View 1: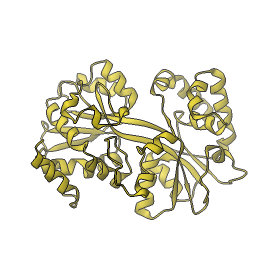
View 2 (view 1 turned 180 degrees about the vertical axis):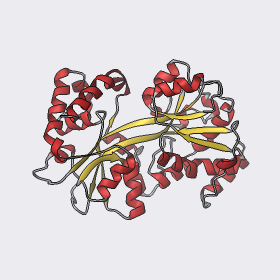
View 3 (view 1 turned 180 degrees about the horizontal axis):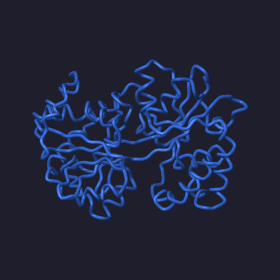
Amino acid sequence: MSVRTLLAAVALLAAPAAASPLAFASPNDLTIVTRDEAEQQAIEVAYVQPFTAVTATPVQQAVWDGGIDMLRTQAKATENQWDLVLVDADELSVGCGEGLFEKLDWSAVGGKDHYAPQAVSDCGLGAVVSTVVLAWDKDKLPVAPSWADFWDVAKYPGKRGLQKGVRGNLEFALMADGVAPGDVYKTLSTSDGVERAFRKLDQLKPYIEWWTTKAEAARILASGDVLMTSAPSSQVATMAEQEHKNFGLQFTGSLSEVESWAIMKGSPSARMAMQFLYFTGMPAVEQRLLRNSGEGGLAKGLHDGLAPELAAVSPSAPANIAAGLRIDAGFWHDNLPKLRQRFDAWLGH
């Protein structure tokens, strides 16, 4: 990408978003696949529109629900129309090992030193840090709560929100029970540790409002249905900004994971995909995503010069990452099926 193009890109970042050009894209243009509709919309405004305006490259967008089986199916399709896909750590590891993704040419996307270490792998470039935090209404509870407080319904009466699934809830339960974040997965790797987590969930079960989507997590907090909830930090921060809500985000004891861009093997638009990654890896462009959606990227320099209130809610701010626990993708790859079955049985009784 030329200096002239970069200057045009930087100038464009300050301009109002243009109308989406995607409706007229052809099947042979760059196709980007993200995790959900909210993320798709954020990527379109922050990344796709300025990239298309600067490079004249039409872009298609699609949404997928995740899962390695879908990636395998797509890779075997006669006409695979996916080029760039947003994947989680487990999908990236398995997909790279199975040859579903192209190996990245790091020299074409800015170099490894341009990004935080956790963004760098053979087949993936870290796109965003996705963080689930303890969120609460500061008008009702002015003091920042911990996971132990989350479980203490006698001291802090009211409903609690948790995602309807086992992944994450066992970690929060153990931290509420006094397990240090650094010992959570060591504890969960034993049968006694799993029993301990479920016993802790038993205590809270009558007070739980279950949520299934990011939007629902923020909605039950905004509506007052719950006093506190686990929730994606980006969704809560965005709602707080847009609807002038006084929400708090507790990054201590949060759970984070890196979602990465991966280029599908054999993509005919691999060169354009690399250009897109180079463009969106500029700190000024990643700042645009953070401001629009609360999603924190991994380019070095992203947080330089940011307003303190914006840096405070960024999932990828070093202080916020350090305060939480990174999800152990390997643990969940090995244990999710049996623990999901156990959780579903527990939920039904």
